[in-house]
Every structure is written in C-alpha cells, then in structure tokens.
Length: 129
Image (tube, rainbow, N blue to C red; front, side, top):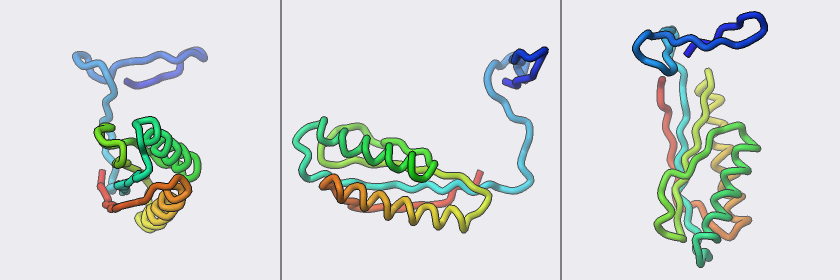
C-alpha cells in the first residue's frame, strides 16, 4: 500500500490492481546489513511456566528499552527451564551492528544473572537484505 496525502487526510492506494497489500518497487543500490542474535537461556530455578515467563518477559522488555532492537521468543514454551530468544537490529554500518550485538549480549547475561538464570549459548550472524 502506498500512502498519499490528500487535503490533510491520508488516502491508501494499492500499488498493484490485483494484489492488495504492501509492495515495494524500490531496490536499494547497496545491501543493508541486519544482525541476528540468538540467545539460548537456562532457567534452572523455574518451577512453572509463570516463573519462565517472568524471566523471558523481563529480558525482552529490558533489551527493547535499552537498545532499540526487535526481540522475540523463538520457541514454544515446551519446557519451563529453557528458552530461545531472537534479537534483530538493522543499520547502515556493520561496525555499529557488531558493537551493538556485543553490548546486547553482555546486557542479556547481566539481566539473566539478576533473575537467577544463565545464558547457556549465544550466536549471531549478518543477514544481508
């Protein structure tokens, strides 16, 4: 969908006559790096799904607020004592992303330790768009 302004009101117009939805015809001249960080978490003290949720929600909220990144739980809450969290950021600079990912990982480790949990493993990669 394209949004155009018309007399102070927004009017939506489809970019394709047969397909409603969001379309983009513009292609960037260079790839934009996206950093994807995966955090594997162990929550040994969790005795219920509620205990697990408390740790995961706190981690997600603090990372979002502190770093302006997208954060999501990647697995289903099958076991109470583990979770997988995905963190994604986009920037023009790979150097900036590298530093950001390292800071996010350190913060996640600190936040989890404060909640009696641990960062069991973490890995990250660039995804070019």
